[in-house]
Amino acid sequence: MVSPTKRRVKVVEPTNSHSLFFNNLESKMTQNPSRHHPALVSLHWLLALLIMLAMGMGTFVLKEIPNASPDKLGALRGHMIMGFAIGALMMARLIVRLRTTHPQVASTGSNALNLLGKSAHVGLYLLVFAMAASGAATALQAGLPQMIFAGSAGSLPDSFAIYAPRVVHGWVAKLLMALVALHVAGVVYHQFGLKDRLLSRMWFGRR
Ligand code: HEM
Image (cartoon, rainbow, N blue to C red; front, side, top):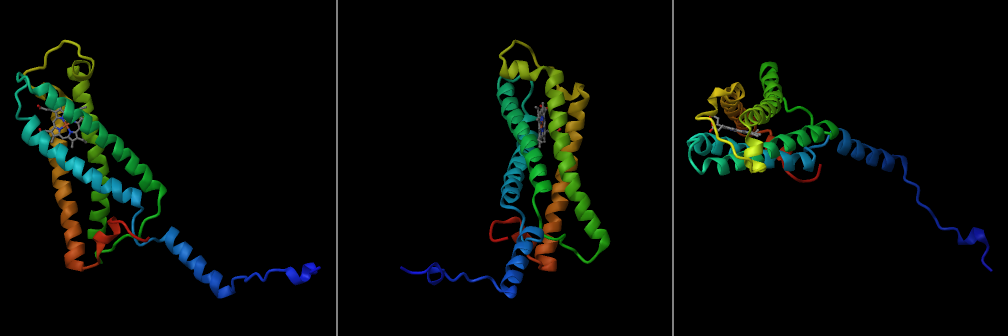
């Protein structure tokens, strides 16, 4: 019979340099990753697409259809569903942003430009929430949810401009377009001016 001492399996304990390497790697992956979390990346590009669509359709299609047209309710239904989806996904995005680790702030080398970039990011969240809220308030004031989703009889006003939230919705839309343009200009400056490969941080891959 083999004595218990002879059967003992040799366990390789990590040496100090091993543990140091893995500790560093782990801390790099969790504390200071090279990219954003994949959930945040997915939400970023999905929201970019949906917001562009909602802005384009709102400005060039929805607004152009007279309220007396039989097509108006269908167009409003599509816009409202998309608008609510954007509001909900933006909230999910904010939660993911607050709960995941991100790469270090990409510095431009200028404090003023860094502040502008940070303010633009905060502004994008605020304006998108303002769009969803002012759109929802307009719809509630006009009784759209009952008309569109509950099939109740009702008529649209000649123009939604009689409601204050609709006026806000139009102005915030213009501000949001300007801020999106500034955001894109910032990315182009990082990517092609500073050549710091900023875009790769907002894409999938090893963190
Ligand atoms: C964040 C998402 C949203 C975006 C990006 C967006 C975008 C737009 C845009 C660009 C317009 C045209 C504004 C103008 O040029 O004056 C518009 C109009 C409108 N939106 Fe939104 N919207 C959003 C959310 C919503 C929501 C959630 C609702 C309602 C539940 C809504 C209801 C309306 C209504 C009723 C109009 C007026 C259409 C007209 O005047 O004929 N929107 N939206």
